[in-house]
Image 1 (cartoon, rainbow, N blue to C red):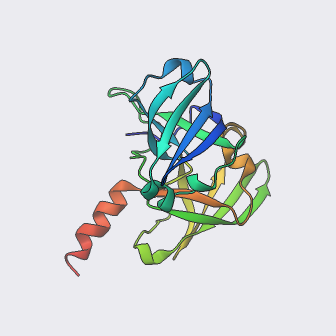
Image 2: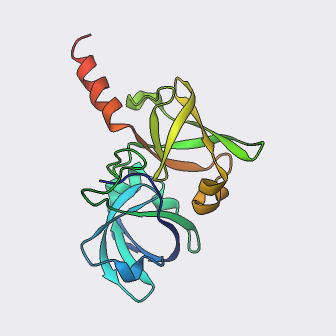
Length: 196
């Protein structure tokens, strides 16, 4: 489990296809604090550390992960939001995040507004995911509050700290992002479907 509070931004150092899998090497200040078999969220995708270096580590994304996320579009040098799994007993500053991306969305708007930014996204509603006003959403691993919730669209407000310390500063219109919808909302939707 994760919180959606990004610890640092790493950089893609190397990408190597291995049959249907993708080995991703990340350069990060977190590398010295990691161990093999540890889970780390990469743009919100939980991946297992399989190899470590002094200032880098390697993870593998399998074909299913590549199909459901934007990790297959990574390029060398690209910024990646990183978060280690939460420890029991720590504060939950964001919201409960599994690191299991539900689907990708597309940025359809980016607007600077008096010291902050409003980002708008659309997604395929056929997958059955929903947002609610003031509910939680995880975008590229960042825990955020939904504003302006509509069918298959929503917006989020990004404060300067989040903009500067995540890869939100590089998200442009037309770019895909990883979306993990609120786990409580997903369970409630599934339960209510049984009573309709």
